[in-house]
Image 1 (cartoon, rainbow, N blue to C red):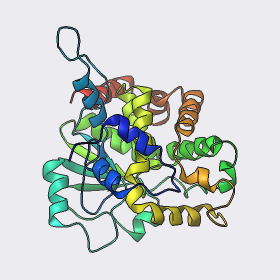
Image 2: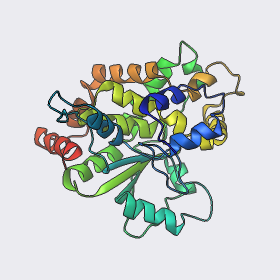
Image 3: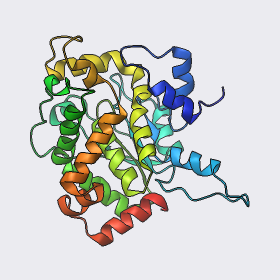
Length: 298
C-alpha cells in the first residue's frame, strides 16, 4: 500500500471530529510516516519524521539536499495512552525497544489518570512520571464557545506549561544528557498535553511554524481509533450537558487557529518557548544550546 502523502494527511486531518474517517483512508494514513504502529497504543508518531521527509524532498540546483531544521528522526516519539487490556504484547514491546529504540517513556497524565492505569512495564524501558504541581485545572466548556474556541485552548495549554513544568524539566534533562537514547512521551489522548510538549520540542529544534502546526493537527487522524471513547472522556471532564452543548464541538476539535493563539500567548507571557525553558524551568543558555544540538544532530 502506497504511503499517504503529507498533503493528503493534512487534508484528512481536516475531517470534522463529528464525522468518522473512512476506514480505508484511516488505515493507509496510520501506516504512513510520521505514524508508527505499536499494538496497544494509538496516535503514535515520530515528531522528527516530517522534517526528514521535507529534507529529502528539497534539493538544490546541484542535486544536493538543502538544510531543513527540526528534530532528527528516530529520537523523539509522541503517543496516546496505552489501551486497556491484558498489557502490551511481546510484539509491541519489541517494536518499542528494537524498532523505535525507546529507552524512556514520559507520562504527562494527572495523578488520577496515572494511578488508574500505570504505564506497562517493558524490559529496557524506564517509565518516568512526575505528579503535576497541583490538581489538574478544570476545563470549562463555556470557555470554548466563542469563535473556534481559541480562548479556551489558549488557557488550557498555558495550564499545561504551568502544571507540568516539572515533567517537562525531567524530559529536557534527558535530551540534554542522553542524546543517544530515544524516548516517547504521552498523555491520555496524545493530543493536548502531548501536543504542547511536542510543539515545545519542535520549536527548540527550529522547526518551521507550519510543520509544528501540521504535527499538532495530525492528532485528528491519530485519535480516530479511540474517537468515541475520547469524546466520552471529554464530556465527563468538561461537565458538558451533552455533545450538543455550546462550546463542546470546539473543545473536541483541532484547529490551527487555536494552536496559533496558544503560541502567541507563549510569546507574550514567556518570550517564546525558549524563554519558558530558560526563565521558568531554569535551564541555562548553555543547557539550551546543548538541548537544541541534541534534538537536531544528536
